[in-house]
Image (cartoon, rainbow, N blue to C red; front, side, top):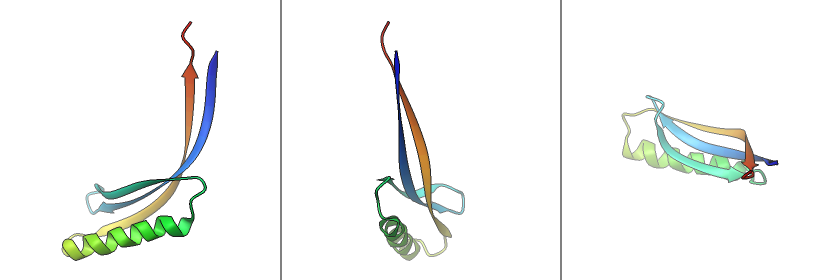
Length: 73
């Protein structure tokens, strides 16, 4: 018998102009959105200071994860 669990998570990340991740963090469903954006803002400040010629963009998004444990027959 299979057991399915669902989990909501948030991810905050910063990408460069080539859509490569430069910073990334995962937050649980109970996290404060302000904390997520604080992570993004701090990463943007650090990265823009270190690499002024590169364009960085911050993102926060929710994703739902479904996990199905399948028992051994």
